[in-house]
Structures are given as C-alpha cells and as structure tokens.
Length: 118
Image (cartoon, rainbow, N blue to C red):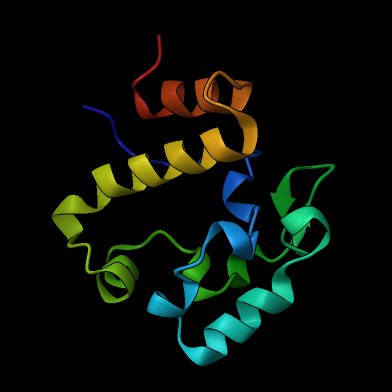
C-alpha cells in the first residue's frame, strides 16, 4: 500500500496559479484567500519557493493551507483522517502532472517515495 509523504525538492504544490484553482474561495477564509493571493509571484509560483534550491523559505511557518495534516484537511475539505493518505496521494499526483508532466522526474520520484514506483 502506498503511503503519502512530501518529497523534498519537488515544489509542485508551490505552483499557486489562481486560474488553475477556481475553488479557492470555497475552502479558504477571506483572510487566507488574501494571503494566498499575496503569495503568488512570477509565473504563478509562490514567492516563498526558492526555485534554485527547490525548497520553501518559510516551511516551519508556512500557512495552514500549505500543510497536509489530518485536522486541517478535515476542516478545509471534509476529508476524514482515514481518507487523508489516498486523498493526498491523488492531489499530489494531479498537481505534479499539471506542473511537471505525468512522466516527469518529479512524478517518478514521488511515486517511488510513496511505494508506487519500481
């Protein structure tokens, strides 16, 4: 069984392009939506994402909407703790495919890390 985990130096979730996420206002508070939009930089990338090191500059202090945690996903999306693993895997795969492609090194690394790769 695959187990979700964040793969370092991926950054697919740091591509925040609002046009690709029309439902933002459905799960973010007005304050969070303002924060989210203020974080969108050049090319739709988060201003806190270091595109050289491919790491978040504020990771320990990142906003709630950047965290994959059971209580947050339950509150924001109605995803119960026992569904979080599969939901997070599917979300990451969709985001990685959209940003880098379904045959990208990032997708291969993610699938391997979660136990779905060869």
